[in-house]
Image (cartoon, rainbow, N blue to C red; front, side, top):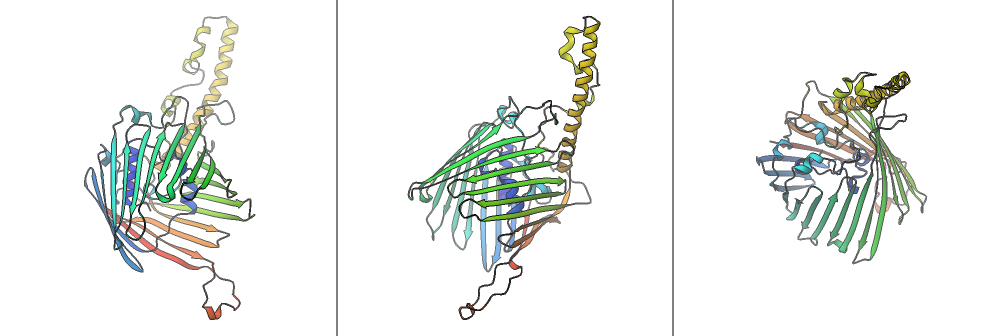
Length: 457
């Protein structure tokens, strides 16, 4: 479950037109959400409040062998943010839970993913701070949007027990490319990340006329100045929809040449209430491999619930279609609207009229197929946006690690509840006097168990 402050940060990004999915850091977000979701440990209770349209506070109390607490405060000068931030009673579950991320394709002529935000852009900033007790650890973050394509982020952690760490990010997103420059005081780390989106055409005369796919390639380079240690990786991501059912799927392929690690993922949303994902890891040097599976199953509520402010779809949803279905439905096969490029032939001979009729018939069938494919994808997208989900079950397992993760997330009387457990097949640690005895095959046993409750007003 997303924390309240994380929800406010993502709402700030949406309000200012920043696309978090167009970043190399989140290039494998879909598979990570389905396979490596976080299971709570112990008991955690969080209360949040929006005191003014620009200030937000959170108090958190947890008990995991030791009682800990934290107090967080956030301020922003972003105008209209209150239209994006929802309370725990009003927020849609698919917005509060980490799940499948739908990537919007980039078409020719679109310099930004959200061109409307670029026209009326206003510089804004966000300040965030959190104090942890009893460790007296301070966490701070600054996000500054100086232009529609740039964002500056500064993160800092100050602790009495450990050395303080300051990390700076300079990000530039032009739509087709997203570049990041990173500098950190931890080992003098310097990094560079880039994600390139290949521009696709809106329509092609092939098997699928309505091209709603997205192909992205990115990489990252890291260098530790103090320890002179390099690191790098590259990833390819392909997102598309089924033309017959409108169901989205995502494929990724990652490679780390220094460590010889290759990873591939396949995620598909089989229905509006079910998502499945698989991941295969292989190391070229050690010949070790691993296969992981994950899924989430959603249950709908009894009463249909819409977004409280009615201004935004779920994060990452694709609503930017080039042609509206209303305009397509008004067109009839063989009408003049279907062939405006042939108006100059209307006064020709009988052969010209015959040519026009043949072209109208040919393109009419193509337009009908394009409209059908587009409406199918649109219908599936709308079913996700308008759905009122009451709860979700998440499962993931790994054959190599022999573990099983189970997580339940839902809403109850204004509370957001997240409860889960992680079972592991690793053998128990035996005392030193029994270490030499034979070990019996270990069954799955609970390794982590917890529940988290959130309430916000």
